[in-house]
Image (cartoon, rainbow, N blue to C red; front, side, top):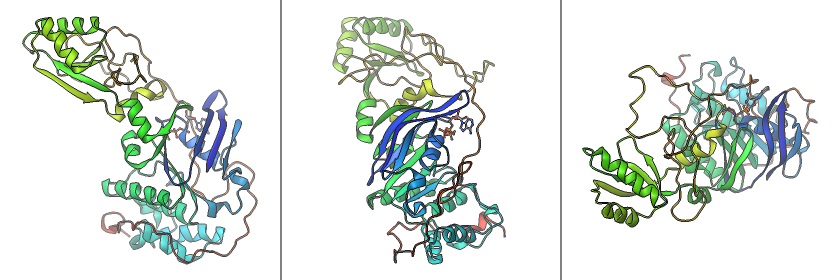
Length: 410
Ligand SMILES: Nc1ncnc2c1ncn2[C@@H]1O[C@H](COP(=O)(O)OP(=O)(O)OP(=O)(O)O)[C@@H](O)[C@H]1O
């Protein structure tokens, strides 16, 4: 198990990670979600002893990484797939890592097969595509057959087949009882891969719960209702009626209205009583992606500036508010009908203001994949190279054979 307690990292004025406490348990895939710059890599680096916390601590199996006995066999990590000597072949890269940790050469060939790089094993990694580099990084993480695995954005650069393969690999590793901690900025990907989610924004913990809980907490129901397009006054009247009855109303781009806080039959009755005709009244559920964006929107470091040039922005529907306004969430967290995450960039009627674009502090390159000596810190005590105990490779799903023809001309 990985346990962080009050974990904090400051770089000068910048607080990259703020008072983070969480546990990552064995036997499950734990997704580590957050927008760009939210502190995921910094947290992973601290877990791996590559960065020293300013405050708090983090342990793996009860000990800080640098005190974990035989760490390369206990903890595998993919932090930066590009942290590879480009002049070395994939096989030689893995062989050198294996030799440092007393892992036999045959394990190198096993993991090359697992990640589907066996056909390009003797090619120099300099010519590898992003996806091939990710596979090589994953092979390095698996090398010591460790019970604890960390992957920082492992699906970056992978094609759909590769993404599916990584997803299944993570699940298989967790099903074998391993602790699997995988970062991503994609909610949609984590919803399919992870059992548990830890969400951070600006270095702070925003959510720590199972995927099931996250779905039931955040996928609120709402109704879509539409009056005849030919009669805009009806839309305005319906908005007034629904708001007056305690509903929250958001304009939709197609001229419809998104209604929360009122059950479907009540919306129908209110429209009928007001003498309004409806062209549509339908039940919906907000997507997880929307919920995640709403949760993290005030913690996003990088946001596009608006481009006001005519023709580059779609017309706002009549009656809607300008984009990028604050999105309060009335009733959020209550059971039943409550405000769902508004469509990104939209706000309920009556709300105002919003965060502007923000700048990011310069960052240093991420660290190399474990097993490696922590960068910038005193080296960890050398692990005694003990005999490689396992005779058989772990029963991992086979990686799809890689097609070298379009990837590496050598
Ligand atoms: N060595 C450093 N010096 C100064 N600031 C840093 C350093 N490393 C990270 N930061 C800052 O800390 C914040 C968190 O960065 P981090 O790389 O951990 O985020 P992240 O969630 O992994 O982002 P991404 O998804 O873009 O990789 C950022 O604002 C970043 O600029």
